[in-house]
Image (cartoon, rainbow, N blue to C red; front, side, top):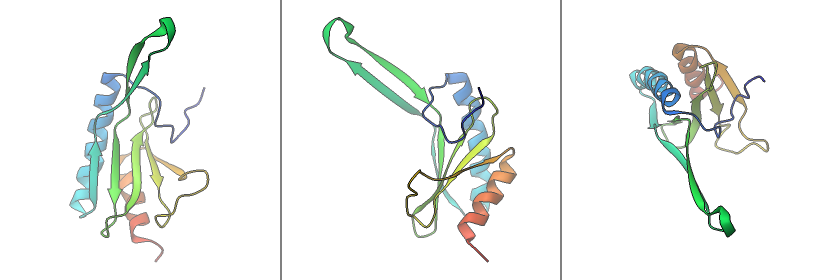
Length: 127
């Protein structure tokens, strides 16, 4: 089954999360050199509690880390995750701060330099 870019709510294991964190921090380093503001969210968890009948219990799932990119004015312009199997950068670019009906359209990049250029072009807007 092919990966679905932008599906950031699929649980991952700690080893995969570690690889994703390293890759996202490399992208963050490239963006910081260009004076782009970012926020790294390395640890994302979902806690599910069941309290009905005999099925009482809980489940804790780790979800992919994210890198959030901000414009100079403070608005979010992109969210970046890693595709679980391919390791590609999945960029969800915001359009003028307005939500799209089906969510932001994901873009893929194989290398951190490619991802940085897509983000920088998006932040700069049309020339």
